[in-house]
Image (cartoon, rainbow, N blue to C red; front, side, top):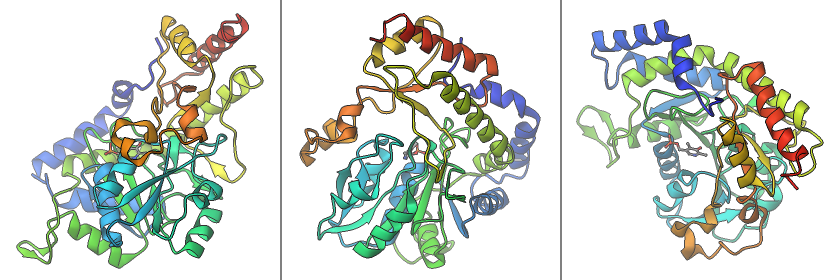
Length: 370
Ligand SMILES: *Cc1c(COP(=O)(O)O)cnc(C)c1O
């Protein structure tokens, strides 16, 4: 059996540290607010290389609060990649703005300057580069385009903790960036959690207030906000796990290296193409094949779990019928039938990786793949 994700095994490897951290929070009743949150915010800001970090309840809230804080004119168009999790586009609509889906690169599955440019109109006010699958977007040219078109930039880093563009970690490129600590993410809490980071201090203050009822003091509310806070137990757990993240990420990259080595050159299988400007942290290892469903079933028979990210491109979801982009000829609208995520993570041994690779190879060698 090769699992897609093994959070139990991970917990067992750090059990003493986690249990002690949770006990400390309970012993000091630091459930909401308090030292564990400030500590984690500081550690995560430093680790990401960004000045301000605000812990929030989850990665979706992080996006909603970030967009709200930018104070764009209502009905602004915001460009979002056509392949992502729905949270990316939801956060736009729920702020009273209009989602415009742009295509992604067939090599690294993220927005490109060209796909963004193709969707610019006089109403475009922002763009949301999503560093999907742990792969950074090509931020240099994207920032140039954003600056010349007067766009704000919201980076969705939910899948990309520590991914680097030209040696610098994602999160500090745009006006604001958001992270998810959903349990299955590269840095995951033991429940829902998220964060927003920015180098803009006044934006940071505004976002902190939005996430906490628009207040500065206990009952001093400057405006109506909402309740979206990182809690003490999650913060303490995240502080423990952050200390292990670089090691776990290195393991993910090692697994990806093996997959690429063992699977390159297989007719019928397209591997992700490495870009010289990118360090991908492989939240997911996504391949493409016309025989996606057959390959997934074949692997499942051998106890190998896979996933599909995502089976329906965002423009084709019922939720976005009204936008009329479901029939648009673009790579993302066609690729959803061929994407397959192979298992990856620090839980996998070298033998596990070899086993998966040889199962994939035997699928294609046996002509099932043709
Ligand atoms: C997980 C995810 C989110 C949302 O995060 P939650 O913490 O689950 O709310 C947003 N964007 C992307 C790309 C994600 O993968």
